[in-house]
Image (cartoon, rainbow, N blue to C red; front, side, top):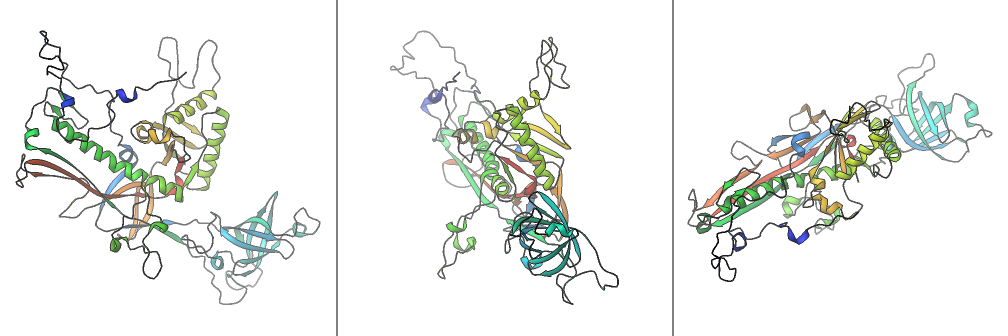
Length: 501
């Protein structure tokens, strides 16, 4: 079955001329046979709303919050993991474990403050060393920078006749406690010598984002502003009447409001390779001094950089989809294990989830039975689900118009590129973070918008009018309506988010 699209027969593109147009009126000229007809046509004055509610904003209002700031950037700190677990290679011939990265795969020298010489494993620690096929319980007898000497409690684990080869094997080490001999002073150290550090110090990661300035404007001449139209206009901002400029100005405002949210979703920071090179040959990051558009980190960029991405839930078959959900649960267990999550998905993914849930229920004889739904023959059949529980996690599903509308992300996704976005998992609740500006821990939604504001200027959404139409501010025979906002999105705990591609 194929569905054709009216395409060019739809008024799909906003008119670039910000004025009353000839195309908005009936042709009463002789060529149009308007006045030559002796019968008066039946004029349907009310503009038909064929696209429904055309705005796509509202996502951030459901899952986030807004907060003012007075700085050029936002810096926030996120906690590190509590327990000590590292990845590396195990050599059973010399009983050594060489640390190569932390448990999340961050190598030495990354922004996650992980260094090989300060991995947290100490002398006399008891640890589990996992390699392919088995887990070894061992005791730490020596620590020298990234090389840790581990002795198994069962000596056969490292014997030549064991099923583990002497060569370096990919392994994971987890500290589970400690064991000391009688009379030993202190609580262990990082090294075998005296005076070595004995405290496992917590580490944290700081992230930053900066606001960007967004602008738009609308202009109409004084003559057109006072010209009546025969079409009764309507719009999302509640505008009505027969003055066409009211619709044009309202549509400009609605479009700008959508831009504020769409930018917070899609924006990304300028890549290092795109930065202007200084005279010394280095990439300069002082965007303010260079006057460069530095961008800002949107939601999708933050999840791809610090969060999780899944390419499952395709709707090919329900069994595969359920397996993919189980993989998502396992990843959430590895992260914050936040039990309540919102799913904002496009139409295809929403139907795939419905089909997946329906397949989990056996069909009743002579009809369809979906769990708690009492789908009798006398009521409308409910074939959709708004949420479900799997394991200890609750998922609440909602359609995201931004991903479906052909005038927004829908037209991008239909290209079938690898960057097509099918949905996003957003954790419910709040996160506790340390705010360096305020100097204390705060609880905020995982998503919130920061906008510039002070006692003299609030740049959350500024609107002002200039010209001589209405309130006279200049001798310009026109009305100019200006829109401005300066904002950025803060994505805290991106490791608890999941992007569906």
